[in-house]
Length: 429
Image 1 (tube, one colour):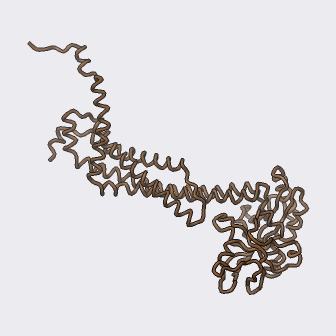
Image 2 (image 1 turned 180 degrees about the vertical axis):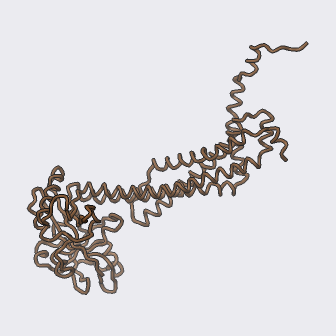
């Protein structure tokens, strides 16, 4: 007598019992162990597959660490000046109406700097005359720049003295050959002999200058060392180094941060009268310190985006490598897949096993890449004398991207493996 299956019996036969759910849950752990076993069985192939992700993640971490350090240093340098600074630079409006590069032609003069002293709310004004020179002391020489400035420039730039003193107003009036040295110049001229630079005489462009002070270090600023400089009275630079009517730039200090915008407008109006030009055709640029910070940070962000874009190519190449190796793995293990499906494994079990393998590869590559990237980033910031400022968000994001790459590029091989016909797979020798 044949047995009959009632609808209620059919439902109970196909329903998943609690014990079956537990066994299905244990399959995740079994798939993970199987994935690790398969990857460890081919260690060299697995490592070579991860290289693309390792280099991609490391490049992202290292580039962001370097640019974060540069950005933090730039912000620190400008912050040391305060938020009540104005910087006036040369800039020329072309006939086509487009502003050419700053410094494309000289337009600022000494009389402009003198006229700015009458602007309300400006408490300190100094022109800058920048000259590149060769400084010599004994058998040591160093290529650097000399900045001719007013005595008030020390307050403008918030320079702190390491030894000696800044030059005085009488030194400026008389145009005396006295200099204040940055620490980079001190190190390159006096470190080898161990001589105290105060009172010593150095030679600049075949002229003798007496050292009256040295400055405390400030570090990097805008990609170059703020300490690689020699300051001399403006009149001295004008008479001895570069006899010109134009200056490189003018810096001014506003009495209160709330008056910066008004002072900026007043400076623009005055210089337009000085240069006999109409509004909108300015041959100069007036920046607030906040504008300089924003412009510098924008440049750093642009460089960071470019470097991250290049690193993303490595991540994509690494993902393609994972897809390729997983497809090879599916082909090599076709019979294994057929046996597992024949004894009851579902398509989702097969898919999860290969997806876990791809995810393990990408996650391991991401972790190694993060460690390598932090080490490379530290080496870069030390080489460029920048602060080490790793970003936790960037590290987590880089790891998340590497894991996502593993899922995306491992999904197709995993789905392909799960759709194999077990009968056909078992026939393959």
